Image (cartoon, rainbow, N blue to C red; front, side):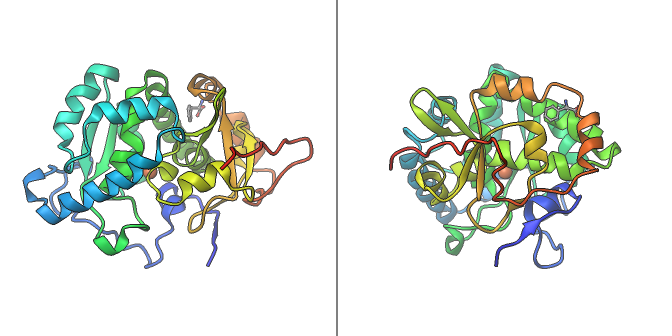
Length: 294
Ligand code: PHE
Ligand code: FE
């Protein structure tokens, strides 16, 4: 079943819980900001083994496909052999960009999520998927969050973008504009592509932690690949249970940062007056950027 999501709750929008909203994860020990202890020693040898398998599959895929910033930082994180200890990564990360990782039980409320980002804290889920979920999970786990998202936090420009995003999220909550900001998150942080002199490269965490979409997003002729433009992205619905029908392409993180610098209030006002675009739209005048050669 393919669902096109269009509702105004950020995390419900991102994941659309099919079971009516029961979250996976143990929320009993968390503080007011939904932060828990990672309890690294509780991971079993089987879980470390599953982590290694997940890591190896993805690490083999990223050379020549992920953007340079991701590849460089992933290697420096040294996370290939076992589930990472968040506090050790935070030490290195804080030195690089003054970001920290905080452990969370799973999905957290929008307000809390944005507050963490606005304060340069990235929430990483503590639980790891089951072996049967090797290829696909419904909610983000530690592999998606850590492998997919943390490397780019070492990049100073992306790091600043994500903090601004958190601040923008707090504002969007006030302005009843979460739907639009969720689309921006989806099409940049989760599924963004970058056009480099060497060809298309991936920076979106949802692609980078996926076994199949890494190659698909770059070389399959079926999806649209459209130059990223903030208001266009914010108008566009997305698929949550299939590969994306459109990828938005940036030149570099500075362009992404600059494009999101303006006050979004007038954008939101306009967006509330127009219909959303389907996930596969290609507008008159838009170029469908050619895929990389397989
Ligand atoms: N400029 C945005 C606003 O006015 C803030 C923002 C920056 C949001 C970067 C998302 C990403 O809300
Ligand atoms: Fe994610």
